[in-house]
Image: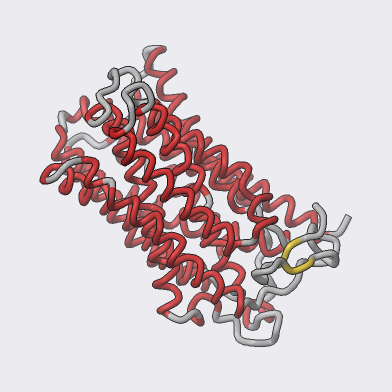
Length: 427
C-alpha cells in the first residue's frame, strides 16, 4: 500500500481522536457547571464572569496559536496543546474560591483555544492529502464527544460520584488519551518543503491571503456561529416563552436542532464532494435562513401546527449551519501553503459570534421581545451565503493546492467540479 495513503488514513484516525477528546472535555466542563456553582456558591453573575474569562482566554490564544502552527507545524502544536487542554481541567476542579477559579479559568480557555486552532489546521492538511471533503465528519465527532462527556457526568452524578472528582479523574486520564491520537498525525514535511510550496513559491500560506478576503471569511464564520449560538441559547426558551409549550416539551426544540446539526456534519462530506464548496455554502445559508423564517412565523400559524412549524425551522437551521465551519476551514486549506494565521483569524471571528450572540440577543429580547431578537440570527444566516460564497470563489480561484498524491483517494482520477474544487471521480 502507498506510504502516503497509510499516513493519511492514520492521520485521519488521529484527528478524529483529537476532535472527540476536545468535545469530551467541553462536555465534561459544561455538564459539571451546576456542581461547580453549588460548591463555590457562585451565583449567576460570578458564573457568567467565569465563562467570559474562559472565552476571553480562548479568543486570545487562538490568535497566538496561528503563528505557532505556521512556525512549528500543526502536528507539533497538537502534541502539547491537546494534553494541556485536558490537564488544565484540574484548575476548575480544584479551585478553592471564586478568585482562584477566575484566574484558572483563563488558563483553561487558553488550552481550549490553542487546541482548537491546531487540530483544525491539521484537519485541513489531512483533507489536502485525501483530495476530497472529510472535514465535516470531524466536527460531527466533536459533537459526539460533547454528548459523551455530558452523558458520563450525568451517569456519575446518578451513581453518587461527585462531579469534582470526575473532573479530576478526567484531567489525569485525558492527556494520556491524546498521546496515541497525536502519534497518528501526519509527519512534519522536510525543511526544504516547508520553505517553499509545491509550486516553487514561498509557502507564506495564511499570511499571503489578503486581509479583505480573511475578513470576508471571518464575517461568514461570525454570522454562522452567532446563528448557531442563538439556537443553542434560545430555541428552548422560544418554545416556552413564545409558543407557551409545556416545560417538559420546550427543551426538545434545542434537541432537534442539535441532532440535525450533528447528523448532517457526520454525513455532510459526500454532499460537499458532489456540490462543491461554493454551492454548499450557498445552500447552507439558504436553509438556515429558511429555518429561522419558519421559527419566526410559528407563533402566527394555528395552535396545533405552531410547535411543528418551529421544530421544522430549528431542524432546517441545524442542517444549514452544520456545514458552515467545515466549508470555510476547507477553503482556507485549499489556498495552499501555511494556514495557521488565516485559520486562527477566521476561527477567532467565528468565536466572537458565539461570545456576542447571547449578550446581544438577550439585550434585544429584554427591551423588545424574543421574536424581534431572533430577526438578528435570521438575517445573519443569509450573510453566510452573501459573504461566504464570494470569499470561497476567490480562494478556490487562486488555490495552490496540487492534485492529491497518486494512490490516495481522488489522486489521478480527480476531476474539477464546476466551482474549481478538486473532486474525485470515485471513492
